Image 1 (tube, rainbow, N blue to C red):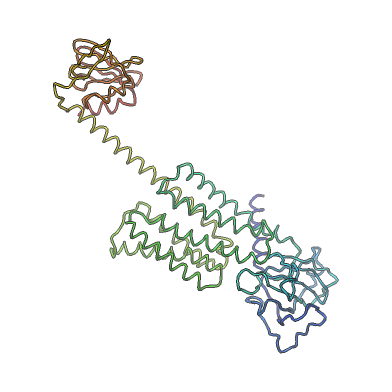
Image 2 (tube, one colour):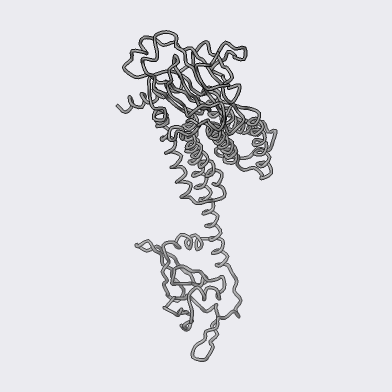
Length: 495
């Protein structure tokens, strides 16, 4: 049942979005007045147009379009609707009957009321008949933010449905990639803002913002003049996504070489985006160009044309960029609308996994390095030749006792004091164990939070049933070794 519902949602979305425009006998005339009864489409100033690539010749025009309707469409139980998506306001008439307005079109800017980018008007069955019907539109685009004149994104007659609800149905499945991206973002934020993970963090945030801008069409019926701003924001997000993708996937190269590659990608992408007017293509080249440059850079390394850089995830990165290129070429115009965000979500998950593995590897290497450093420190402590004249001063009752460090067997914390157990006596040091460590030479090892031992007096180390250790010292003394320190002390003593 769930699978059937998903297929139904996908099917209805595709039908809604890709209804072909098959109108004929379409004419455009300059709008010099707003009364439909006085419009003359036989004037020399009128021109034939193709609605599939139509762009208004001026800020206000009249259109006449012939629409063929079948008996089945007219007699359907579902009411008919006229669907107009485009960056213009419109007043619509079918066979001379007023249907409604996409805002209020006007020949003057001050009288125009900007309509929503997506609009549907109810078609009264009495307004239409079988065969050829005439759709007449007064359209105006005085409020466009950019210099582009109005154009149609969708224009057709079909079953009446709410456009926002239909786009919501189409975008419903984007919750899957959005959820994957949010999980990736939460995972990265839980790891902290480390320098190495910042490009990936930025990439995930940009992808989420771009997806939210994309689905805004189904959330808010925004005025038509905001469409170009929305498309520009999507193209801009795609640009930064492509550059962040390069930063994430190019590893183990010098900062200069990385800057050179990203700069070349940025300049080339911006140049292509500036010269093209199609916003979908602007967004597509924003990922195509970084993908091509990364693959060329990798091929140059394989051919040893440039110095190769080692990366344990090179194959994963290659698969990511090849998938991007393949998807953009195969799906063409449907890429951004239907495939892009699922692919981006998969990329985000893959890169997050790679980053996690890389971080675990680095942490393991760092832990091993730290462990080796501690072993070396202990080994040096065991072999350290301590001068015989080194002493520690013990102040008590107005007198100072000089205790040779060489005579100290071990030290034990006792409240506000530390007991120094020597070969021939025991004395109290007024201060903390840490303060005593600072005064002792490197021949002493901290084996427990309460004990320090002189390495030269260690005779035996053994593990106790509890998991802790115990040191046998000269003159029969026994000192506990914490579980955390046992392995390090054992390795040091074994050397």
